[in-house]
Length: 156
Image 1 (cartoon, one colour):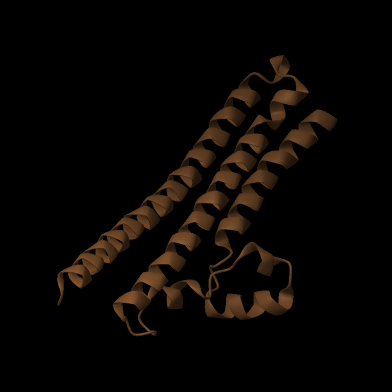
Image 2 (cartoon, one colour):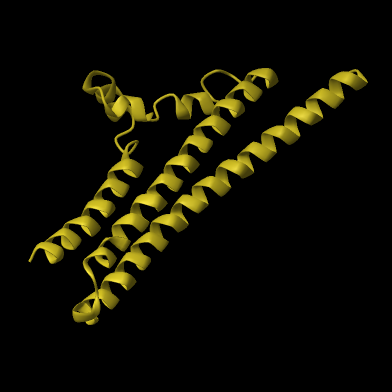
C-alpha cells in the first residue's frame, strides 16, 4: 500500500472509531434522559401532592414541560445518531465492507419522524423493527401522563 493510501485508510479508520463513540454517547444520553425524566417527574409530583394547598395551577404543568423539553433533546440525539450512522455506512462503503454487513442495514429500517404520519410507510418499518418508534411513543406517553393530572387538578 502506498503512503497516501495508508494515510487515507488511517484517517477513515479514525473517523469510523470516532463516529462509533459518538453513537454510543448519544444512546447513553438518551438512556440517562429517560431515567432522569421519570425521576424528576416523580419528585416534582411528590412535592406538589404534599404541598397541594400552596401550589398554583401553573406549577402543575412543570413536569409536563420538563418531559416535553427532554423529549425534544432525545429526538435531537436520535437524529444525530441517524446522521452518524449514515456517515458510518458511507465509510464502510469506502472500506469495501459487504453491503449486507454494514450500518446501513441496521438503520435503513429505523423510523424517521416522517413515517409516523403515513401508515403505508409506517407499516413496513414496524414489521422490520417493531421497536423503532419506541422513543416517540415513550416521550408522548410521559408528557401525557404528566399533563392529564395537571389539567385535572387545575379544573377540579
